[in-house]
Image: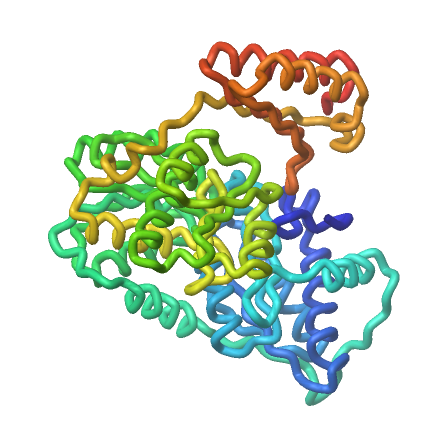
Amino acid sequence: MGKYFGTDGFRGEANKDLTFEHAVKIGRFLGWYYGTNQGKKAKVVIGKDTRRSSYMFEYALCTGLMASGADAYIMHVTTTPSVAYITRVDDFDCGIMISASHNPYYDNGIKLLNGSGEKMDEETILKVEDYIDGKLEIPVAERDDIGRTVDYVAGRNRYVGYLISLSKYSFKDIKVGIDAANGAAWQIAKGVFDALGAKTYVINDAPDGFNINTDCGSTHIEHLQKFVVEKGLDVGFAYDGDADRCLFVDEKGNALTGDHTLYIYGLYMKERGKLLNNTVVTTVMSNFGLYKALDKVGIGYEKTAVGDKYVYENMVKNGHRIGGEQSGHTIFTKYATTGDGILTSLKLMEAMIASGKPMSELAAPVVFYPQVLKNVRVKSKPEAQNDPDVQAAVRKVADELGDTGRILVRESGTEPLIRVMVEAESNELCEKYVDSVIDVIKAKGHLAE
């Protein structure tokens, strides 16, 4: 991670941590780096979610790009995976998504994608940061070389067509609930499900600039659980603000995670001889219950650091076809270069229809260990994480749990947080052990004011 960019872009409170000046400079650098620097005019595609500040950052990025001679193609409100897809298939030099994902409306972020629709490499990110810090000088475009903006809503429409084309089955008469989180999927998801014949019921599809992720979407799936039961739906899908993740609900109202997705679709692929290397890629946050279920059906697995970036890198390096995070980022490398919530929904529908079984039955083999995760806002993530007393407290918990559970303490890649997670045989034990570590973090004075 760099000074400004974390595992999922440059993220923070709008005009406090991430300012419009930052956005102008990012646009300036990318327009030059992929354009004049290479002896051509750069083409960059931009999407945004529904936050009020996304408009400001969109215009700021366009200003910087045009000032450096690049043409900025604007997809308007759209999802992160749609920008990744269009960047790749329409031969853009790079793509930009304006979103803070599942964060509250007052935060925002800038995610950078290379010409293949993949997350930008660290070397280029560091060059962007050097320019932000004034370590580089780049020329402005003049006269005929000044760039322009191009309305590119057609790109979003083409992405919708692509999603529809991936479905192997009609969804006719299947009742599907969608929680759009008042975010980027609010128009796209219903259109896709309707086109495939589903009876689609949508909640939280009225964004106003301030209600994205507010008591809705994948971070508040309890509302979708209630909705599915009340309406008698067959399944429900919940997205986050930029729709690169998907959690879901079975017909009984049970909340299901990215771990369930990996099991359900991984087994579906294995049964059809499509699970290359007989392996799914997980992160260290996946539940013990997933591994036990995978062991039972003879599917192998790998574990990466937290972040879909690391999952994708592992998949590409080793030729694996499915991987993801418990939080709902699921990557299908045959179809996408990033997590895609709507695509995940379609793949789960495919597995459900092909099996002829309800979603509850498909998910039943994954029996989760109780898990408690608490976030602690700290002054310095490295200092808190590396404090000898904190590390001793973590080792003590690990020793006491033995092979009946586990503890994981890690730094957030996007926020000033230390995340403390324990899996054990009961919620009471989880709470006890998590709090024992947090108490040490507090006692050593690491809490942010």
